Length: 211
Ligand code: 5RP
Image 1 (cartoon, rainbow, N blue to C red):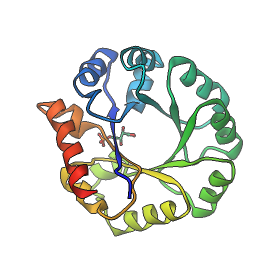
Image 2 (tube, rainbow, N blue to C red):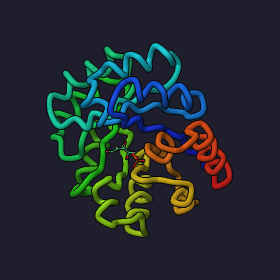
Image 3 (cartoon, rainbow, N blue to C red):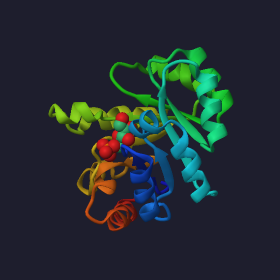
Image 4 (cartoon, helix red, strand yellow):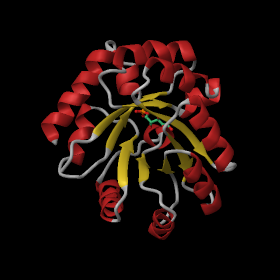
C-alpha cells in the first residue's frame, strides 16, 4: 500500500492569512489547496501567489465547480493550478469539459450521489474523487464511521484515487488504517493550530506510523 499524501486546505479569509500559513507548512505537506472559502474571497490571486512561492508543488484549486467547466478549469490552469474540483452534481458535460482543460480533476462527493454516477465519471477519464464529511454535517453532529469507510473502499475498488477530508485530526486518521487512501486533506487542524508547522509534521508522522 502506498503512503497517503498530506494536503493542506487553505480556507483562510484572505490571501495574506493564507500566505502566512503556507509559508509555515508548504515544505512539510505534499499538496497545497486553495480552499473554496479562499477562492470565493480572493478568486485566483492565491493560486498565482502560491505558485510563485512553490513552483514545483502540486496546487489544487477547490472551486467545487458546478457549471462552465472549461472556463473555470482554464482560469485555474492559467493561474498555476495543477488540479481543480467539481461538485458531484455537476453534469457529465461540465465534468468532461473541465477534465480536458486541467491536468487532473477531482469530483467532490457531498450529499446524494450514486455508484452508477461514479462509473460515468470513470468512463470519461476522471481518476480522483474526494470523500467529504461536510463542515456543516460535522457541526450538526455527524461523525466519520463504518458507512463512510465502506463507500471509500468501494470507490477504491472501482479504481479511483480517493482523498478524504472533513474535520480530520490525528485521532480520526487511525480510522483509515488498512485503507488505500490517496490523500488526507486537513484544513483547520493544521492552519488553526497554535503551531501550524508542528501540526503538519505531526500529521506526516502519524501517516508514517499508520501506513
Ligand atoms: C470545505 C473543504 C475543506 O477545505 C476541507 O474539508 C478541509 O477542511 P477542515 O479540515 O478544516 O474540515 O473543502 O468544503
